[in-house]
Length: 407
Image 1 (cartoon, rainbow, N blue to C red):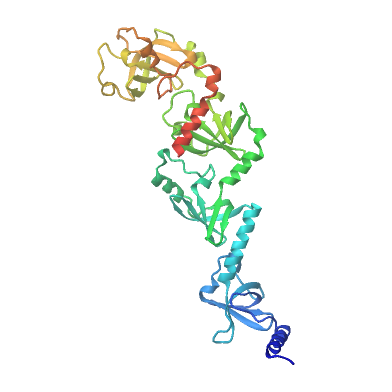
Image 2: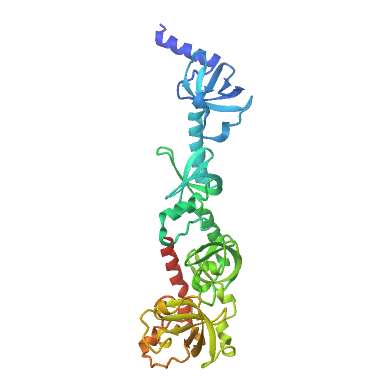
């Protein structure tokens, strides 16, 4: 005896064989575009049904369906089985959303490099458009070229620099995909890291490289070469004392530098070591007791830095400026003033030259006061005489200073 249930099942099977599987809400169907209108798209499904996509359902998260034409094959999700015209109501939006997330996961796994358009900036990073999907590019994931190096880490200044990227395209990799939380994170930094790890044997201490100045901060200049980036600390830019790296280099300048230290993926460079040391031949220019004319370039509580020529500066200690005690050196001397001085000491190895205003009586200095006289270019507290090995470790301090300033 044939039951009602078995008759229903047989009928459904017959319908499937004759007319294809009856769709359900939520199914994703394939079809061919019949027509493309201003506000709707009609598609043919298996030659048996017509579906329509209209209104908001036309907007897909993927750019795949933005320029449709007749006979294109598309996928759409069923939202209603029958509308007022007896057609299937479909959505590109839902189907596109699922396809986009699947594609992003594939990009994450493959590590493929893609282009992303910067839409907006906030204090944490950049919002980007990745094939119609919103993604986030954190500040920490920017490359060295684009990292907003701001002295003191001022968040408002960082935001100003990030806003300069809006409207630009950046090459990135997808590093985190979470459809459930709708979280999509991309990185630009990973591209540079791969470049660094790909050619580590090239970079050894003593190698001379040529590259482009990519960024300038108060503590030094960053130079990009062979797909990596190195730091030239302010103390390694020139032999003479400088107030700011911008006095020596500009962004975009092509420069040569010597690798002086490699710390993991951090490379430290020196430009001045490729230049002749002007202090080696100082005896040909200056001698103790010589009267010279110089320009005051720095006023400190302990004395004046005086430029004798573009390469050599000397220090006139406060005790060598007057026979009377000076209460406030800044009230008596000003940057830019020219004056006559007498050379009282020359220490070429330490890049030190001592000066005195003529007529000031020599005073016996104790060891402590002598130790407080910094060599040319020093802005911090004095240092004891270094061995050659000790000098080679100076970039470590430069690295620590740079990381503090970028924090």
